[in-house]
Image (cartoon, rainbow, N blue to C red; front, side):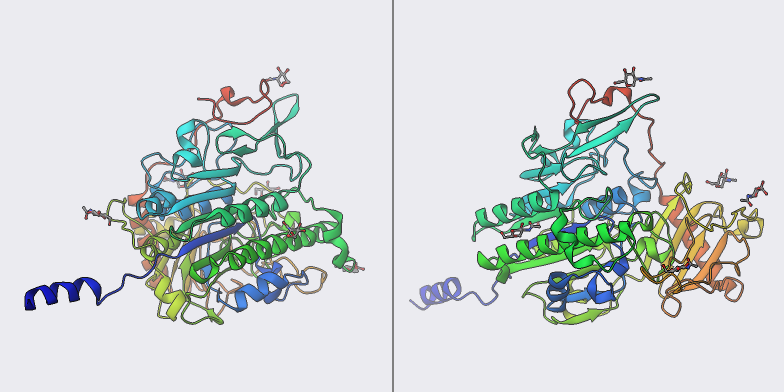
Amino acid sequence: MAVGFVVVFLVSVPLVKAAPQPNIVFIMADDYGWHDIGYHGSEIHTPHLDKLSASGVRLERYYIQPICTPSRNQLMTGRYQIHTGMQHSIILPCQPYCVPLEEKLLPQYLKEAGYSTHMVGKWHLGMYKKDCLPTRRGFDTYFGYLLGSEDYYAHTRCYHNVTHTSCALDFRDGEEVASEYKGQYSAEIFSQKAVSLIEKQDHNKPFFLYVSLQSVHEPLQVPDHYLEPYGFIEDPDRKMYAGMVSAMDEAVANITAALQRTGHWENTVLVFSTDNGGQTLCGGSNWPLRGRKGTLWEGGVRGVGFVAGPLLKQSGTVNYELIHISDWLPTFVALAGGSTNTSKPLDGFNVWPTISYGVASPRLELLHNIDPLYTNGRLCPKRRNLTLASGDSWSSFGFNVSIHAAIRSSNWKLLTGDPGCDQWFPRPGDNTSDSSQPTENPQKPVQLFDIINDPEERIDLSDEFPEVVNHLLSRLNQYQKTAVPVNFPPNDPRCDPGATGVWGPWA
Ligand SMILES: *[C@@H]1O[C@H](CO)[C@@H](O)[C@H](O)[C@H]1NC(C)=O
Ligand SMILES: *[C@@H]1O[C@H](CO)[C@@H](O)[C@H](O)[C@H]1NC(C)=O
Ligand SMILES: *[C@@H]1O[C@H](CO)[C@@H](O)[C@H](O)[C@H]1NC(C)=O
Ligand SMILES: *[C@@H]1O[C@H](CO)[C@@H](O)[C@H](O)[C@H]1NC(C)=O
Ligand SMILES: *[C@@H]1O[C@H](CO)[C@@H](O)[C@H](O)[C@H]1NC(C)=O
Ligand SMILES: *[C@@H]1O[C@H](CO)[C@@H](O)[C@H](O)[C@H]1NC(C)=O
């Protein structure tokens, strides 16, 4: 009888209760700048984002990639761009490639761990063949657009050949073309979709919801009523952009309210993140950071981000630990109780203890990128005539310093080649807030900054700390040895949506 008693006891009173699997909601903003959120002192009103982040953990040394496809790629793979062959640029509409199919994506890991997986919004990770679509890469459901830069109401993406500009629809529900949303503003459509998905979720099965908003990327479009609070903004682009931010703020409020109304909130980790720095050519601001979207300066890679939800142990805090977008995959898989044992080598770290409890980040180093094909394309006012020195003096470290690259290690950041538009843009509405443009730097192919003490990247210290330069060049060289060749294929004319009026897989 004693034996029977013991067995019953062990079965009915487990000593260790497995942690419940939290729902994970990841909301990504597009081209949302550092200075464009209330808690960074913006003149744009973001009451909901301010309140939600104040109840959670604001990430103030959070890094993303400088442009759309790379940030989304690293979010989905947990791996640096140099390891997927996608170190250059975005995927253009007619390029026949996507995130390599042998890469295992975040929703696949979470599905394995028992999650239902849903995506709403912008994909931009390739669509030339069906196997590249979100529904074939781990998402149970998908609703959104596959490219970038569409019209917010028509949901079309325009393209140019030598003589003509044409526009074709890019909007899908699952893999089916969704043409009935014409005229509706995307922030409203996507938040409604997210809300209805949340309402349908089962309390007995955890879910992953990736809401990849179109807001606040160009084109600058917003329903008039969102502009009402911004009569004081003179710059028409900034005013329109401010209205778009307000619409996004409301979209996030509606999604959060749905989580709370349905009781899912108690078991949800919500992350809000931009995908890259703001585009100063289209209303965005990263003040006081240097550079902008598309550059390796802090204005391109240091992003707005926060985590919210009742599962955080130290809520209401501001976090200054080094965290990168590639860290979400191992973090979420760990929260889900899943395993990355079948993955390719990850470049990300599980940063949940850092965010939730405030312990030091496991990330000591961050490779921002190495892109041998980089060219600085867009208008950059007052740009210096960049003629790089030959770089011979650095060649003994093995790394070709003409290449556009940047690496961060503790407080140090080393940049090589042309980092991109190097201006300090003035604070919006205050054209006197910055008059000191870069003149002091010689045209050196290598620059070193102490980001902790000089987050605006004003004082190049490469001459003062040659041993730091040498170390970081040797680290770049080691990374470059692990890089796979850049895959950036020419456009495939078969992509032409002219016949159907719809963008989609063609191969
Ligand atoms: C450009 O597009 C127009 C309209 O679709 C088409 O008639 C023309 O042949 C195209 N030109 C080239 C060079 O592809
Ligand atoms: C948020 O919800 C309210 C109430 O349903 C709605 O009127 C508004 O359009 C929604 N906003 C967005 C951006 O979806
Ligand atoms: C990998 O993790 C999965 C899920 O936790 C587990 O079922 C499997 O046995 C593990 N495989 C190896 C090789 O460790
Ligand atoms: C160094 O990199 C630049 C830029 O990518 C390239 O043009 C040049 O050919 C490279 N030099 C060598 C020696 O590989
Ligand atoms: C930039 O430098 C090149 C080569 O020295 C020169 O030809 C060109 O005129 C310069 N451009 C400007 C805007 O100074
Ligand atoms: C700054 O803005 C004021 C007011 O719009 C304008 O009068 C002035 O010319 C501007 N100054 C510069 C340097 O752009």
